[in-house]
Length: 616
Image (cartoon, rainbow, N blue to C red; front, side, top):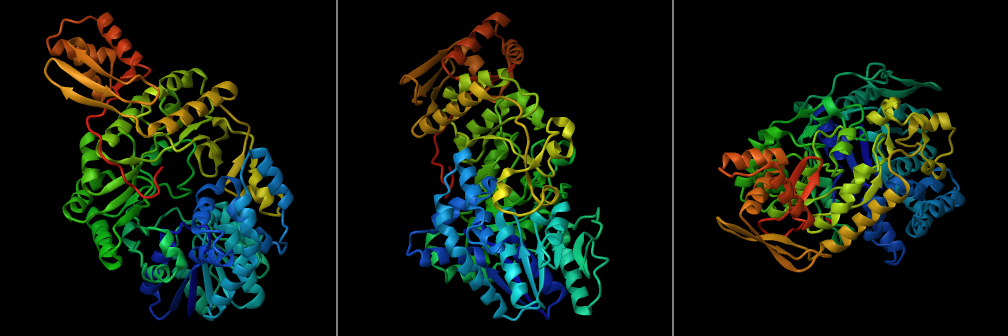
């Protein structure tokens, strides 16, 4: 059997396809005689644009679309004309959408004329290897590019079997992809480590794949969707990825000079928090939210093997949330390696300072902690299990350790009130020295999220997102099964408060560079804080006596009552009124942040250099 594994745009250029890397290993393990080739078409598309446009469309333009185009359907639209065999496909609809949404579509309009010759080139390359089976990995905006290639493949060589898999095939989406695109022979719903090799066995034996859980296939002209399995792939059966061909392709590509390559590594799947308290807006885990983790020793063997093989020290751990057990095994081994690793990890935001120290020692320089908001009540509406003051403390503690933090300020939750944002907006100028949100975003309605699965949470009305109007030509009922994003009447804050939030975050982002609030002297009787924040007077705050004691107690985050109890334990004769007055004075000077009853100190104890390629 000859097999081609394809990753179409818009895979990020600096990362290999984890799906292809893993499936390559799975096929080698189950069918060692198979001839497997890889087509890294995302990389090829960026190089094609660069060459054919005479340098006018660069890999930076590619990356801009890949990182920002999903919620506007831009990457899919570029290839939709090829899929529908109409180079002017839905231009009017996109123009109208862009005007209504304030989205810049100049780059994708310039890219679109190159889509058809590129798809033809990809098909020529694939058929030149005479494959029996062509498998496409599809996540986010890889749907239409993959469908466009699959359609032309079947036109030119009907005997080739086309298989789609990945996150875009999860649940009802895979069945809808298959039944609405006859040139797709199979769609693998869910994890592919067991299902894909089982499908290949059936293709070899020419038997119907009735026993492959979750598989969608054609029985003559009738689409079949096998029942999905409740069981999930055990971590021990998930192999380390093989990135040999990807690295070889990257080193030979003109794209190489535009990117700093990173290795995608997987230690765990699912979300241990989401198993019990799934964040209401999040649908990223799809139908596989149950948390499973490889042991720390196993992950270290994979990490060290990949680093030694590829000589790349930048790692992106793709886990949706870090296994807390890794603080006891994996991270110490990374720290002891002596390698100058630069690692990205998704974590929960309630990490302790000693845990952050270990992350930094292990080479973790970039975390995505899911902060989302700085108001405890809104965070409760999200079911985040953490408060606003704790999130601010994390920003402060990460800044001290040189950890870059990626986060967005989310809003639009059913039940949120204007008052939930008034105090946050008022205090944002005091946070200007800490890492700001990457953006201010009204939440989308995502398939698989609790907001989607439970209409009673507030999003009972929903239709497929308008962005699909310029991508597909399908009836609404089919789109409702096929797509990931949905339009729904907005909830939560609107109007003046929404505008104030956007302005406040914008001011935070604009004033962050060069801002600092640092403890420069701390003795028994006094504490000096140098204030060099944008928008604040240049001054040093000198705290003495009770002010010093109260401020120190808020560094961990406390309520006023907790501060008072601790003061009494320290021998202070202080009243609740005195503590309240001190805290009010500290807040007025922007030295503490208050979220409800919780108060946290804002000055950092050090100013390290923060570095991460591509960070905000």
